[in-house]
Image (spheres, rainbow, N blue to C red):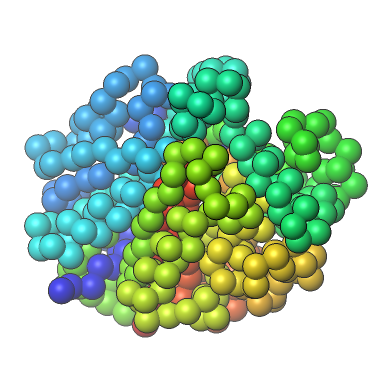
Length: 385
């Protein structure tokens, strides 16, 4: 079967985008991706849109985006798995190309979130949890992940300071990313002095809702080599797994079982291991989530995630640089766009185009995108030959 390559990437600015509709956000990223790929719009055979429709007044988001991008009558469809919707769109496009149904597919992750109030968003996000016995009693995303943090602190001695260091790192790199929502560095002292959210979390432990879009153009091996010759970044490993909707049914709260399973699949398909990953984008919706990801992906041993960040092993120059675009924490989290944005950063890194955030010698990269509270997880491994 054909390899699948990324031939074009585009990314708009994340933030409170009252200046643009969701269609216009999608166009920003799509235009840049088509220009980057050096192809004509007519060569795109299909599109896959990653978005969560409940945040928009428009029920069928894929249709209006497809029309605005002038891609009709090519087929389009929507993927929705909460915060992992963008990575689900990438996987869907990858499958369409691998199967031979399409040769060139556009993947657009797009979301408008700031038109809703914070209570409305908390209610929507909370319902991604199990609604009969959990979210109906008031559980929210911060509360769920706070339980993971409390469990990890109790079992492994992870500290508030170590979690704050995740925020410090990601704001450091976010300050160097022109597309990031927050472009200011912070200190551990400032993070620990911020307002409480859900114990042990404070404001700087939590990512922010945002509007934004990102786009990839994927192509079969023949089309990819014709378009970019030796500058193709290949999507060589894909993994996807699920877990129970209810955290009450989980064996423990110190890992996301879907992440470990998805990583194993992606590593096996790509013929790689954790030690081969030169740069990674992981789902840091909360600071503890990045620490869990270090461990679930095999970047360090279970229980060592706090010490991994404390030793700056996830900085450029460390063992495995992670979220050097600012991550969700500083870049913002427009949930449908996040997975595609992660891939955009990895492709830039593997091409050597990340500027002052560049990881030297990066030739293998990974994205880790979690939906809900771990009910879904997508892990993708990218390689530059």
